[in-house]
Image 1 (cartoon, rainbow, N blue to C red):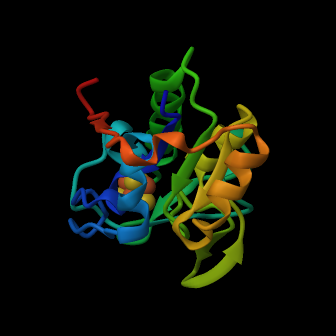
Image 2: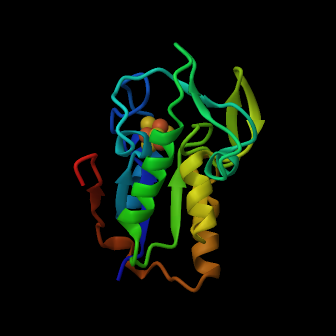
Image 3: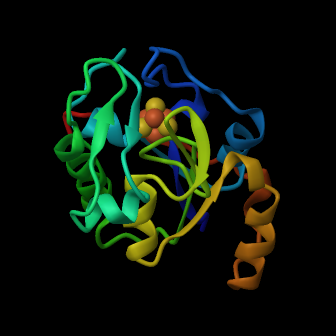
Length: 178
Ligand code: SF4
């Protein structure tokens, strides 16, 4: 049976980014031949529209937002959208509750999905996005499109074989209505 992975929707070609575009990544897309793929966009799940103003975490990273120590602020208009980001992360966790999902591939540098990096005042700083922090807290292994080659080593080490390579997987999309 194929293992299931959750992936940031914009990496799979969904036009869910703040600018209404996708960030399609062929290496990530190819994983749908090896895994069952569940596509998620935490910001859409949190009720934000597309397009929308870009956002930044004001202090620390996503873990600090979850702990109530930091806020997520829109760059244009300075609206506080912390609750939408926390709600989106919560809905992602809810969507995978009780499942066998053990790993995720998330869009690097996003305030929701960033894995090692996020932006603050236009500069890259180390840290995870809000949903990535929530996934890590739940014990999910999280990779980004920038370290995709580490995925199979990691899954092999976890005892998974890839005999299912020739079987096409499928993509399931969680939308804001689920
Ligand atoms: S929240 Fe994540 S999935 Fe949605 S557009 Fe941003 S990076 Fe992509």
